[in-house]
Length: 170
Image (cartoon, rainbow, N blue to C red; front, side, top):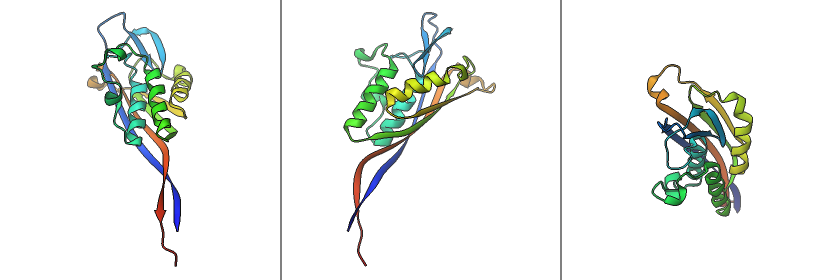
């Protein structure tokens, strides 16, 4: 007897970018632009939150990572909007039969405050990812190395193409 079981997979993502010395560089986190602080260095818009979610989702599906899908050596991704990159990654996964059940992120930085923008960030990320994405901010608590940039950790739970398991009848 063959039984269809769900193919549920968990992925972990991480991204970090250092603060930019370019005063015109815009800070973008979760698709939200912060105008009162300098941005992060990076080939794209350096949205560490979107990048961590992409990595978590790609990892859960077993199809590589953000660097493989959107290499920083490719000029077409220079200055890219990372929410759009998340949308493209999500579409690729849907084309392969994967669905995001949820993703959760922790972004580590002292400023700006995430809480006033959390709802908008979660909406941006959820719409692009094709499933619910939650977010929380944590401070560095004075650990100086953590204050040199912004980090984000993400987990994603996906369900994919069903497999079958053969069972013996008694």
